[in-house]
Length: 445
Image (cartoon, rainbow, N blue to C red; front, side):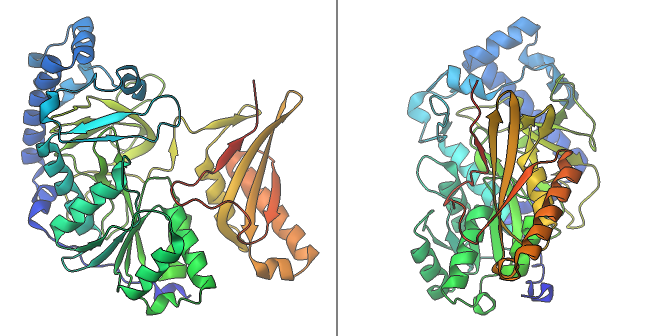
């Protein structure tokens, strides 16, 4: 498909709940301070761990007289949720908790998060603002392929889309054949999924003879895993839709913390509910807007389980310029890496997103790859397996060798390391119906 076939940017949708997106800066800061003071007082009174840490620092709720005073408050980290499992960080009595979600629990016990009815109302509001920012309208047919259940993605998107006035198909993740049938037969205009799963759908639909340009689908809303601008361009070119990035964390609320708009130039943080900071990930020192560092978020309105200065481990920048869409809430640059998904090979720090960027710069590859780490003796080894087009394979060994050399050079240029490259047949690498598993680490010790 030609680039010109990509759907044009949808005009911004204004929904009544979107009004805070356009607040004058002074009014927004006043609202943030009022909510910060209230949530700090609530956490201090009801959450023992937070109160102990504040007392150790000599900080009381009345110490917060300005937004800048937030830097005097202690950080919260993911291990705090594990160490107080399951209900140790709740600030509401158990009988006021109307819903619980939990992380996948890949290491140890899962992280439990709680919601009062007011919290669910806020969640619906920010997801409605998310969909409106992405050009979704009342009456759109929305296929929600985010997972339902303990994972926060499915239900978070569901309730926001319904509140916007869209027709929601709660299909959840997986069952690709059914996904394609619904996509084709129901007149779907908006699809929510992880970007890697949408690529899988694209592939399967192509094999099934589905003609993407004939589908009414125009908007894809993707989250739950990092993805690059190169992958966005691949998705948009092959499908003809507009692909939008959204951002959220279970610990904060779920999806709905931030969203791109029609400009596709950074993610607006709904900072009337989630106050963003950028810190130096090594020292914890606050950084100015425009400087890259670790994103720290404070929930300004969450009742059941306030998160004060939560260290996300996501590396980004707060963009200081006003967005062309007119929203006044600040934007962050797309999350391309985390401070804790980095791996070290021969003394060099490597992030999976760097590998993806290098691979997608080279013609002849498909957007499916896997990084394998191993150790021979005392030396770490890295191999990148990437699928290539059938056209390259049919062109013969010279074309294959040339592509392998180009990929190795692109990787060395971006990550500063010469690594092995293995070219894989189309559709030969593992697929995921949820978050893609990009790194397989066989090292031990």
